[in-house]
Length: 211
Image (cartoon, rainbow, N blue to C red):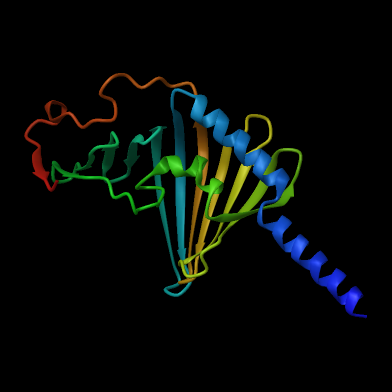
């Protein structure tokens, strides 16, 4: 009886450990990351739906992002962000004002560091292939740190191009943010200075440097 119980416990532990890093899911995400990292940039036209179940509120934001390593340019309905790894410029067209800050290394949100989409699976997450069909893989990532507010991230990745279809973030406070990639392109080559705000392009802009 004791021997059978030990075998059952060992089997359960083995299943739990293997579930933490589903080999098929890791393989898909590794290729997704490799292809994106090898491109001159990743351009995503996206829509973000934010659902707050506590407040019974839904907010939708559309925009585009061009990502190259730690550099990016994110264009939203009411502001534009540039970042070159050393500084972040947040331009508000309605008041013709730009705020300059230093990047926060502890901020791992999509808006703060979009490149994490391609590498976040490498550490700090349990990875599982939830399902797949002829067009895409659906992969869930669960944080290993149970004290964080994030419940899970669900990625949908296209099978033909290993392109991002959507990324869903679910938190303990009842928020669900779903980023849907309306377009995904790996061919754009950003020219020099593309990820740096140029005041000459915005006549009369007020610059607030908070570095």
